[in-house]
Length: 106
Image 1 (cartoon, rainbow, N blue to C red):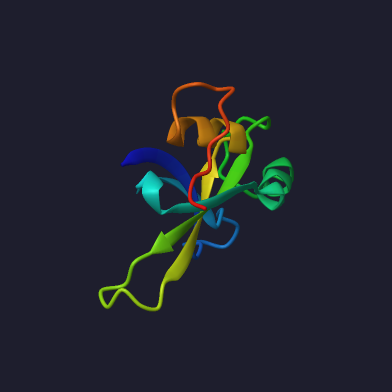
Image 2: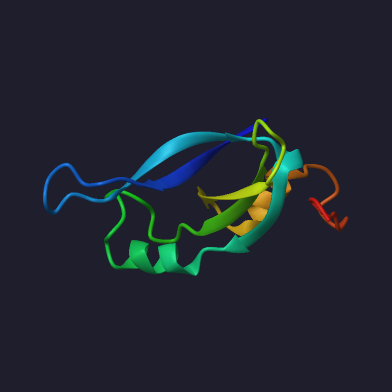
């Protein structure tokens, strides 16, 4: 299991508060289906709609995971918005030779 920082959406407590917060999340790399750039959140950051104090150069990655249900069927997918660009997140999930191409789950 690998710890990441997730951008999570919550209902705001007060009008004008950010709807988003940074929270730790643990991800088991064997359940990762795919990674993609989360351009929408880069835009929200530039518009000031994310928590204050974040570096404007931050990037975000959508991480899709297989979720195993207690009955093992049907297989479900969950999506997490992780702080970091896809290349960095992929490198954290698969440390080692950076030039080596790896398939996360396929």
